[in-house]
Image (tube, rainbow, N blue to C red; front, side, top):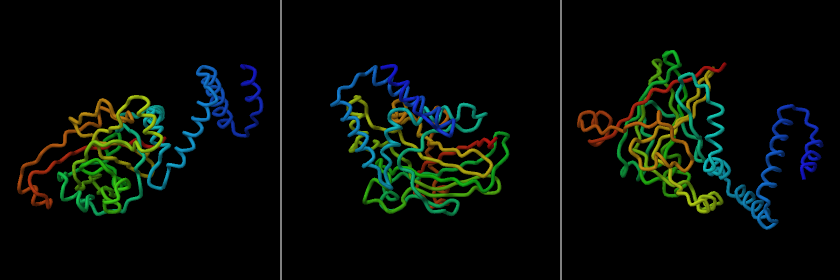
Length: 283
């Protein structure tokens, strides 16, 4: 059987060396896995069916392959490899399967609308974008998205307004930003598809701790994809996609000031959270 792998590798005729290196490793490790596990033909066809159904589950609003990568820990492993030398920049984490296009919004806008705005706990999010030397970065694009107060994204729940709890902001000349939202909730990743089968077979829960997603983009700087997690959430130590990092866990502080709430158009009390993001320049 070892000679069979060598025969398969001998037929590679790649023009690109990186492609050849990747295919060589893929074939070698895949063949080693098959020799180790020795699947029955029934198990092999079941695996093919699983991958087929994973692809068919993908839509323009749901990416089941990304979710599969997430729950198997592959997404965070790729993240760790690509950001192992961050030079003090903000730590990154997974994109997740629910990123979607969002509209540009005025600084300070409220990204929640509809019933979520009425039900949710009002929250002020603010901070600054700077480089590793502390210099503020103006005109940084900040793409934010999150679940609602009961754990659903707009693309999951038919009852939510379109493009809810999403927005794109641009930092001020001093690198600062702020926007209004509601406090996010912990939520389960989708379990009605093939990935749910994996979680159930593994005896694992599907919950993610409460968080807000950020994607920050500036010409000349490395793109940052990260989360801000809510301190005290019960799932911080068992995130279904392994995305939690200690530096990204923040206290959402309760503000009881009626005057502060009135200035923001909130009812008192409300929550506030502040975080300064640090970006690496592209080498």
